[in-house]
Picture 1 (tube, chains in turn red, brown):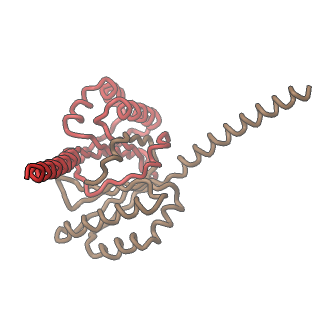
Picture 2 (tube, rainbow over the protein chains, first blue to last red):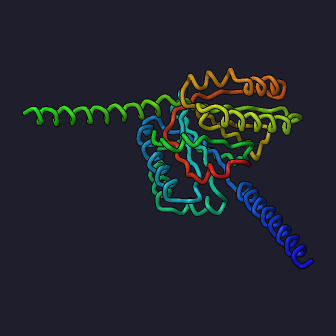
Length: 139
Length: 139
């Protein structure tokens, strides 16, 4: 009887632990912060801006565990239009990012190059990646 | 004299191979195709569209080695506005993607849900990811 009770207790605990870990994983996913920055650059600063942004992105993603992805592109038809697709682990990771020396260097260093900036707060529908994308990330 | 010649030849071949592999890596990066799809959905189809898009993205990235990333989000302030940030290994990988059964199912199945679609051809400034992003990709 004691053995049966122990087995049932053990089974119950295992199930509870699985349920708890699932909930934690789900909470982690839901707390992510996703943003799109839509930036227009003055044509005279195009090369300087791209270099500053690329340096900033490399540093931030390498140095900050909460900065999960930064993807910056420009519109081929309108090269002064830049989009940065940003994924942070949480809002607090994003707030911490804003205080880093590399972000402040980028922000202050490119201030005069930016004609306009629109920030879009986004929520995920689906994010899927292949591992090959990480193996060769320099562009 | 023969040995010296062999050493020089060997050294030259090694350097040539390194140069060739660097060129190949660079060509791989440059041949990537990046696109942003800006989609407006009719409000009545919001839930159905999100479900169809999420299913399509999961299938495409799992089944197609040339589909490196598909990231779909909606604007929190305007939930009918959807952006898909797409990274393909090459233009031919993208062309092959358009002919897959899962893409055709998504495209035909959501045709009536889409109010407008704008495709932006983009070029990379910097793309950087942390490995954590891949370990927990379901949203």
